[in-house]
Length: 427
Image 1 (cartoon, rainbow, N blue to C red):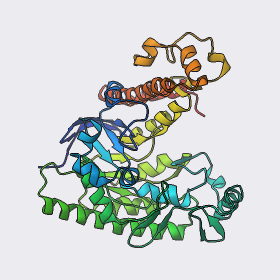
Image 2 (tube, rainbow, N blue to C red):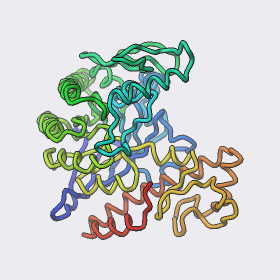
Image 3 (cartoon, rainbow, N blue to C red):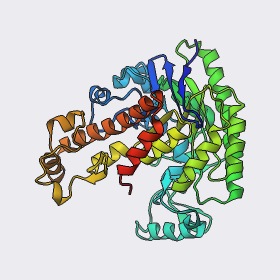
């Protein structure tokens, strides 16, 4: 049995933009699609039924977090993630590769998937060293899990070697060594429909020499991931075989991105992930460079991207799938999406605003509650605040990408994109 099938239903003339569908063992995903992130096998504050009612077609879980708690073998023994978390649709699992970045170079710093810095403002290693020193000096004089690296005392929980990555658990400090083979075994134990090769997501502050070194390592890990994936399939004689996606890296460098896309596309993966931490203005070019090379007949997933303007950029440049924690994390902090931009519902102007979050929105929250009530819940620190806000934000993002698919099929993508971005106030 094939792990998945992908069909392109419509291509936009003169662009990489397309609409299609992915068929997995647990159902179909119409693309382009946004995949909500249930880091620990749950969308925080929502039941699986509530998540489904927002329009979610699939979920993505985090390998690193679920490996640490409750453990991949327990999940396997429970019958896999679908049974364990009561989700009937497709499930994707990341590889843990992003934790190489978030627990390594980015740990303790304000570095994320998308930076606001301009090309000339990208932080240097010396700048990061100063910031790291500041972080350390403000902490416990003998903070746990600190290691010396370069010139600064880095509060890193991940150390990279040729064979894999050594993690110190953020839960109890226990040490774990994750190799490409181990990552694939964990994801197989989950019973996910789509899994990813283990990779190294580099910091945008790393120099070209290190970016090249990390890229070569990512390519070696990709091959090891693929080979072990195949060996597990042979050994276990699985029928519901997971699809394995290879990940393209290369930072902000055109030659590295194109090289990575060429090498990864030459391996027989079922689809592709586009990874990396981007400067805002880099993302469009990086995605375009990659998708002009990757095979057209396999799905492409842009990892960790979920703001409305970035979703349009990705779809424009041939991305089929997205995932991101931003909509749900923003919701729990009181930041809500509207067609005019994001609002902070705790602001005083909303305390007596008896209109819905978004006029005309068909989500459960907007049909039943007002901005005033949401503002009251957040100010009172009520648990229901996160639930109602998360329902709205997920509905907004899921239906925005769903609308992109619709207008692609109707040959109206560019007009829709222009109209939306004209009214949407970006931060």
